[in-house]
Amino acid sequence: MSLHNETGVSRRRWQGMRALGMHVSAMVLLAACVTINVYFPAAEAKEAAKQFVEKVIGDPAQPAPAPESAPEPGPDGGMALLRHFDPLMLVGISPAYAQSAPDITIKTPAIQAIQSRMEARFDGKLRAGFDSGALGFTRDGLVVLRDPAQVALKDRVALNQAVADDNRDRKAVYREVAVANNHPEWESQIRGVFAKQWIASAHKGWWYQDASGGWKQK
Image 1 (cartoon, rainbow, N blue to C red):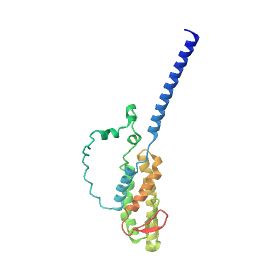
Image 2 (cartoon, rainbow, N blue to C red):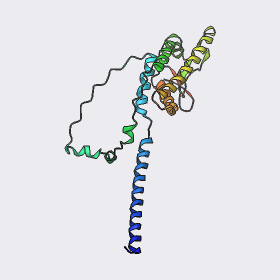
Image 3 (cartoon, rainbow, N blue to C red):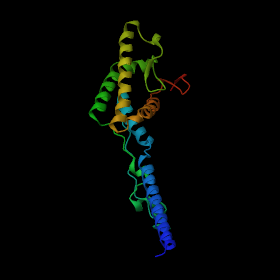
């Protein structure tokens, strides 16, 4: 074989190996991008927060919604399924939302222990403070004594202690929910979801902070 032919073969071989390497690198990068794209499951977190909060403040459970029936096939038959087909499945890569859509759990022993303490404290001391207007929910998921004049002087020390204990448990539960679901970095988002839920579940007449920090009454 002439030197010219050998050089041409070598060049084509090098170009083929380079193209293959670029293809493999692209596939690895794609897989990495899909795998690390873990989103915060806001809807699941909101439902978990609602269950936790309403058990603490004692709201009666709402009736469970009727199970949804399976959707009827549309006029286009199986074409609807094809529109939702993800080509990444062909290379063994699930979509990011399928890989990282956890069902937020609040059923760990640590979380349930905190919930039990908060429920007992709410019935024992805090509920009366909310009913009188002395206490309010803050915009960051805590409780504060907003109007001490509504509390008898002899009761203020005990109520302040109950508020401090409750806020310690609140901070702990936001952290525990994030850790229990293997995403400690979600703590601030969990806290934000719970903060909104305390206000949403507050009874008529209770006080809460709005987004600007001002006080409003439900």
